[in-house]
Image (tube, rainbow, N blue to C red; front, side, top):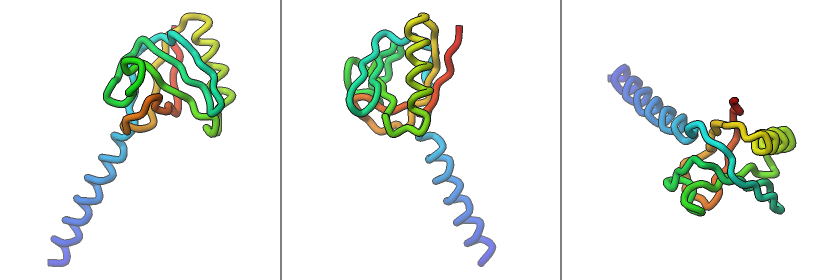
Length: 110
């Protein structure tokens, strides 16, 4: 009986862990269309749309929060990508709906 109980709780734990892993997701390849610095960080707009998480501007609005530990590097890289018209894929931190959901990392490509 103890073995069955342990296996059951292990299976339940794995279900919770896999749900947490899905909280973040990658966008498709996209271009940045606008940038908007504000008091708490940088808001930017993309051709990529996801109205399931980004509730403003047709799902194209995302942000980098000033409290991000790598804020300066992320913003300068994002601005360079914007000015050189490069594409990027971004990792959105959460699937919680917000006007400008936070991203935690991104990849710039040619």
